[in-house]
Amino acid sequence: MSKLALFTGAALWAAASGAFAHGFAGKRFFPATLATDDPFVADELSLPTVSRRKTGGNGDEPATLETDTSVDFTKRITPNFGIGLGGTWVNQKPDGGDTVRGFDNFAANVKYQFLKSDEHETIMSVGVDWDIGNTGAKRLGPDTFSTLTPTFFAGKGFGDLPDSLPYLKPFAVTGTLGLAVPTRSSTTTVADDGTETTTQNPNVINVGFAVQYSLLYLQSFVKDVGLSEPFNRLIPLVEVSMQRPTDGSAPTTGTINPGVLWAGRYMQVGLEAIIPMNRATGGKNGVLFQLHFFLDDLFPRSIGRPIFE
Image (cartoon, rainbow, N blue to C red):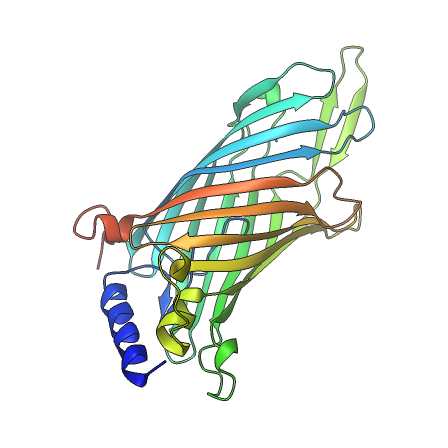
């Protein structure tokens, strides 16, 4: 490929990305990942995120085919501070039982982006997720207590690697580290016969990360390899999401999610497999799909801009 062609591709991408308000650090575009949260603050709408997987049976609980359909909305209050709201409609079909449907507990969050390095393609944020107890349908048995999860978020692109490693530059890694703290240390239930059962609610460490390879970056800033639409906007990735109680009452569980994202100017489409990472996680493989809208690009002069700039 000629230097002129590479320069032209980079110039066109830079011109287009000037309209992108979300997820940029220098030339690096960080997409909205599906199974783990993003390291940046933005005006975005995920409508919908759909996951479908059969969970494993546990004791008297039968294996259940669960389909979750979620809507998540985030809004910047200032350029570096945002809030979010989310809700999930749950459809559970247990083996040998009746289907149960309803909303899970609703969720809210706040996030502050405290670092962005264009030179090193790095973004870092901190935030708190709030799972709002007793707001879901009782027939689903949602938690009656709330859970607060302070979380650290980070994203790092490899575009600052030396030119002798050109094909590693499109790589990027994002990650989260959080501690889920329930507002009630234990929950006591009373059976019809008067028997009381107390269940402990431990703190839980949540760890997530995503390794991604941006064909957007490759095509625009490394080498024009001749990819055309829609392949020149694909971002293959693998996400990992893990949880473990801090008191050791249960083993580490989680999923591995390989998949691909397509990022356009105004929206993004993602599709991933859901693979249990170990026997303790249980269940079967599943699928995760998301349709994601960049409100800051769709409506840059109204609902897509920070309230206070």
